[in-house]
Image (cartoon, rainbow, N blue to C red; front, side):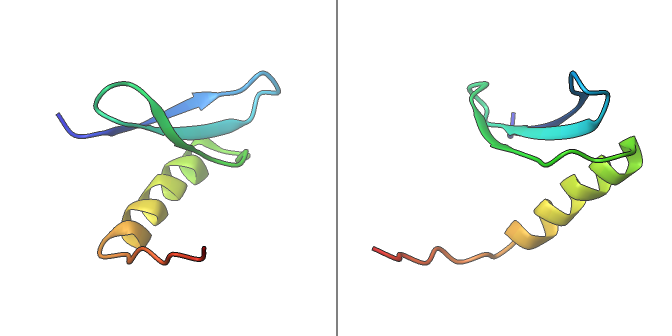
Length: 59
């Protein structure tokens, strides 16, 4: 199984998502969104941005 996005409601009632690796570790988490559809749109934006993204070493 690949990693997965989880969309959830935080303690303030806002929507957020987190990206979990196959082993269940959270590897990324989002800002707060006003609507569930906006949070889902955020997951889609991350997927598009990550496709073919390069790694830049700034050290």
